Image 1 (cartoon, rainbow, N blue to C red):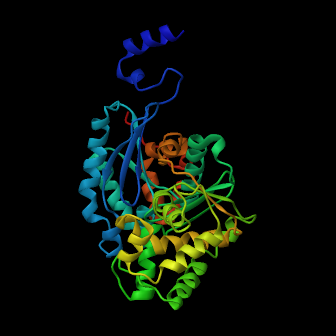
Image 2: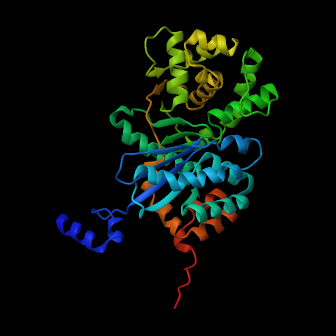
Image 3: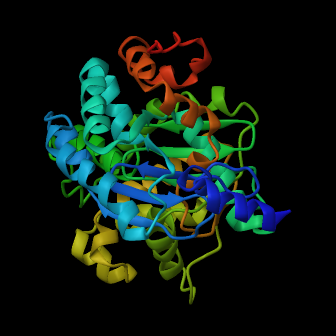
Length: 365
């Protein structure tokens, strides 16, 4: 039977080449986060990457206009660089930066997305926070297997964070860089995306904690039973965990961090200058720049979810597996004009409406 399928594929040409032998469609997906784009094809392990800073122009009030040319170039070039099948169905998933753009002006974003589709051939959907959480847990469970012993994963990105579980998830538009930016505005009266917070006084720490509690008020509604957390992303695995390990004289980064250890690391180092702290804890300066705000963020999340020890396991998690398996998303790509119309009216929630209720496309006779 497989031999017959291969023969038919050869005779039918590119139409059947784009369909896997098991009946699965050939798909290409683009994971479009706050700092760049990652591209993958169904059935292949390669991940192609392009760095694009979406947060800086958004935070400065310039929108996404200056990022559109590199975005179109990446959507065109990454599949070619990876040797992906040119006939695969293509879908882009826009995450934190794109949700911010939708919140600011969903009608303008719809115009930008139409321009991207016209120039690149890729339909980009703005993926809601809840759906991103589902992608994250699915991907982490696949990569960690039996090593995932907690109810949820904690994924801190540049623009958003996810506390993602099998059934319940919480997400918010303040990842590492945006949370740091919030503290810059609140404590240092700075509008820059990044500022130097240190040294921080006891009063600064308490003000930061109050601000974070306000931002995390919704977590108890979304996770009514609390959550145990495995942190999987670099702000914890390359910053927080090594810093805590160094302070407590452990030879390697910790696999588990208690709330007491976290609080001690924060309070013993917040009053130092950035350079002094980096030297004391043996943390690279690029990670040290956000370390205090990361420690505050993780401390607040642990407190809000019940005060359990934090598990740590770094993985290279992307949204690509979730996107590639997202039948709703690829259905929307076939009804993209309808999606953009709904985006103008519904905002990010347009994704959850039903593409089957879109008007039928006119046929030419």
